[in-house]
Structure formats: structure tokens, C-alpha cells
Image (cartoon, rainbow, N blue to C red; front, side, top):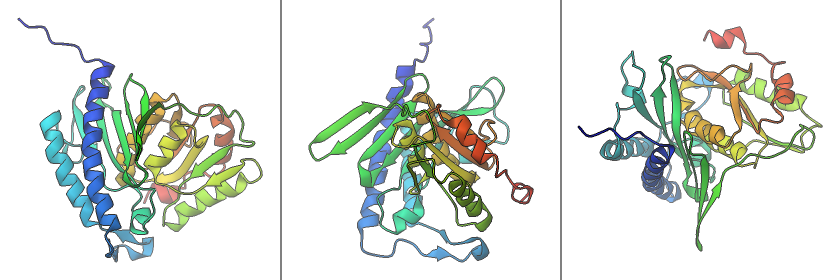
Length: 298
């Protein structure tokens, strides 16, 4: 009887590289649409009181392409969005994200991504991402990470491809640090982000607001930023969060909710990521603006 070969971290990294290749193909189609001089999308009138929502035709193209191609590589137990209500330990599901940073995309900015993550259910029957790929087509950047195999940044330029190990910064204090934050179009959520940023004034050297979440997390992982925070990332952000989370974890950074608890992959989250050295200082500011009950119950 033939013995079953045990999976290694390198096996997961090789799989991540294959999926990254697919994301690059999908990303090229999305980039072509962005550069096409026509209206990419119009704001939806649904829930207009909560701000504009964009529906992109290219999102459907990405989902169809990635779903079909991943099924040929390693389908596992299917896809996160169509998984059964109950899952068993050991089951794995792919989560393919729509364009992360849709407003940047529609406004012809370069900071948007396509993402993929592989979730595995552990012995406690809780899901955890074990592969994450974040591809930014307009920047020529790809971040990928796999459990136990570290994280890598791939930068494609006109003179070739450069690969670097992803490691966070060594900044040990909020003083002189560079932070990033995110905010949504929902007023109460945006206000919390702005309140935290305002309370930090005078300590960081700079506080950036560019987005999207997947790219911000990767920039914490590679030391571009020392930390990133955003209130109330929603369930539709999970694909981008999950992909970026694996990159942060494998770079030896930290990621949690604002209260220090672990991320919940089926619910909304206040997210903070850091190089691991300034998290306690930063949480002092974050915890001054707790998750409001009115938001939590919405």
C-alpha cells in the first residue's frame, strides 16, 4: 500500500505561487478595463443613506475565471461563499475576493488589488487562513504567504522580476512612526477612524490614508508602515483581510481586533496590524474608541 505523502510548507508555497499566477492573469483583465476610457461603474442607489456602493462588471469576470481555474489546480472542498453551514476539521475552502479598493479603481488610482485566500478548519472547528495572495496589477506587486513558509514580495518591472523576503519594520515607538488607517463611507465608522487619527497627532511622523485593506496589511508586513488600523471592516472585506493576514503572520507581524481578541472570520471586525513592537502603545489609543453597541447590533 502506497504511503500518503505529508504536506510540507513548501507544498503550500508552491500552491500559492500557482494561484498567484492565476491572479496575475485576472488582474491584467481588470487593469485593462481600468485603463479603458469608459465609465467603469456607477454608484448603486441601494442603501443610499449609507453611502455609494459600486457594482463592477469586472468582478464577475474575476470570480468566474478564478473559480474555474482553481478547480483545475486544487479544488479542496470548494469555495468559502458556497460552503455548507457546518464544516468539519481539516476541510479547506478558497475565498476569492472581488476588487479590493473599488473607489481607487474607479477613480483610476493604482492602489487596488485582487486577492485569494485558502481557509482551513482546525481541530476546534474554527476557520483560519493558511494561504494568502494579494496582487496589485497597476503597481506590479504581488505578496504571497503560506503557513510555515514565510512571506515574499514579488515586484515586476520593465527590467525584470525582483523577489524579497517580507519582514516588518523595527520601529519600537509611536514617536516618529508611520501609520496607515482605513475608513468607510458610513459616518459613524468613519468618525471612529478620524477620532483615533486625531488623538495620535504629534506622535507619528505621518499617518497615511490610501487603502485598500489587503494592501495596507501587506505594507505593514514589509515595513512600509509600522501599523495599520481600521474600524468595522465588514464581512464583504473578509477575502482581502484574510489574504493580507497570512502575509502579516508569516512576516512575524501581529494582527488582531482593537480589543486584542482574534479576528472572527464570519463577522465584522475592528482590525489592527503592527510590526509587533508598537501594538501596546497603539491599542491605548484604539481602546478609547470602543465598538459602539449601536453598530454592533446593526
